[in-house]
Length: 216
Ligand code: AMP
Image (cartoon, rainbow, N blue to C red):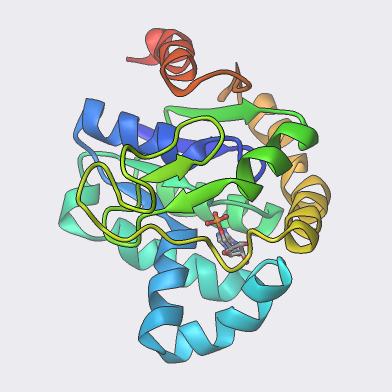
């Protein structure tokens, strides 16, 4: 199964991607997570990416495309993958299409998670993330059992640096401008499956599996 997850920040791509990765036993490849690891480790790529990420803007295409292409070569991605947060621009989408066509491994589906801007802001302002296992919690909707501690691995939950209100609004505007056009790109290719993601995690998970039924 080769999937792309589309949707604005806060739509639940990470959460649903984790569920799908477990369900199909394939890796979830999150460009945001990979970039944050680079930032934390202080690599050259991380230093370059950080200024863009802090402003809520996209990291240049050539940096992200190379990073994803390398990741897709790894052994665990040969049986399938879930791309979470990539592609985000027309250039990235074209680069991915070309690489997958060349390898004879086209996408099976593109899942678009839809939520209102209002709900996205509300979710992101309350989001807490586990830096170890990447699980996310929401202080309002899905709080951890013990405050500040990950239910899954016991890690210390953190707020993401770009989850402040101004940066969230910038990220939503950038999404609308640069990523929303990809919906038409994938609709034309008959790959787009739209999911109403303004519901609790389990229900969105059920909707996702129903939407995927024709391609599983
Ligand atoms: P995310 O964790 O998906 O919300 O991504 C966090 C940040 O990483 C974004 O706001 C961008 O700055 C950067 N980023 C993640 N994926 C991409 C991508 N495909 N293209 C460009 N920048 C990206």
